[in-house]
Length: 72
Image (cartoon, rainbow, N blue to C red; front, side, top):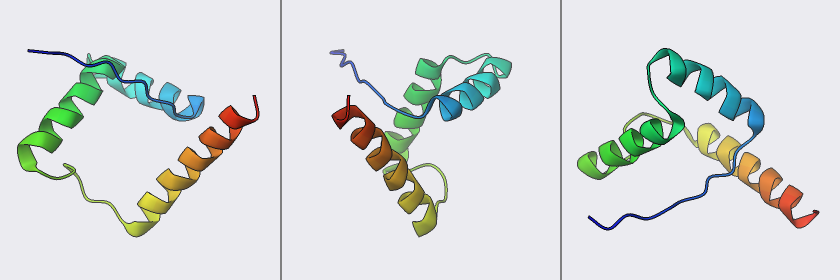
């Protein structure tokens, strides 16, 4: 199976909180991302419910991260 490499940018606070939870579950960040994407592909949709507000917040984080990268 051909593999791809992805790079994910996210706020350190979210990374740290998620990492703590994943470690308790015996998972790495890579494991969790793989599980999420496998389930997304299997279901043909995101495997959890979300609201328009959730999407707006995610887009704000993305804009903030991209703006910070442009200002480096």
